[in-house]
Image (cartoon, rainbow, N blue to C red; front, side, top):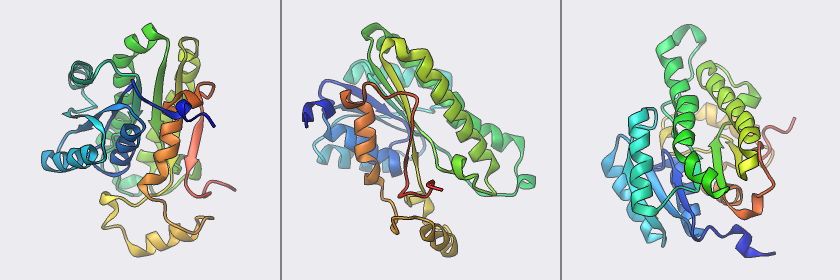
Amino acid sequence: MNKELFSLKGKVALVTGSSTGLGKAMAIALGKAGAKVALNYFNNAERAAKTFAEFEAAGCEGAMLRADVTDEASVNQLVAEATEQLGPIDIVVLNATPDQPLKPIEEYDWAFYQSMLDFFIKSPFLITRAVLPHMKAQKWGRIINIGSETFHLGVQPFTAYVAAKGGQNGFNRSLAHELAEWNITVNMIAPGWIPVERHEKDPQEMKDGYLASVPMQRWGVPQDLDGTVTYLASEASGFVTGQNIHVNGGTTVH
């Protein structure tokens, strides 16, 4: 195997929502593969500082940048700052997410639905549009959407989140066709339920029920995404686009 195919040396990556959880793990994975990584947070500066210290302790190089990825001006500033500090962005991982309460449809309002659309459709659109000039100019780029198995499983009561993730899946597929001629690949990773910080208060009976549905009979951990995100960001996946790769121990195999 040619290990150079998986090297990200000389590349610059942006991972949104990367001060915690899966985003943090993926940012570190890309950094370890050789990329300079722009990590992103919005709300918790103290947590972001701790994450960046861990990122640097892992031998990675990059920057931690504050931005609201659902706001156009903030996104443009984020891309400009990342470019100034690290270089033009070659790889984008669209990971940022808000809280995701499970509620019957009668208990949602449109404002909450809109917040899901803002994170999973508006934000990917704004960020992709901001980084495309460089990617098109060099005829190389990697856009990686972070989706969810919930769209394929039809998880309930979860309509707002599942609908927005379905929209992001459509964005992924259409954009892959649109950008293929520039050698820019667009793919999606659909993680299973991988417990991170925001799952600490989830009911134990819900956790037990999900674990029983995993064919590999174990919980996923954030590092289970390392290989997939590195592969999709690298030359090794150069002829792979428009795909949705499930990382979930087999829960969508039916």
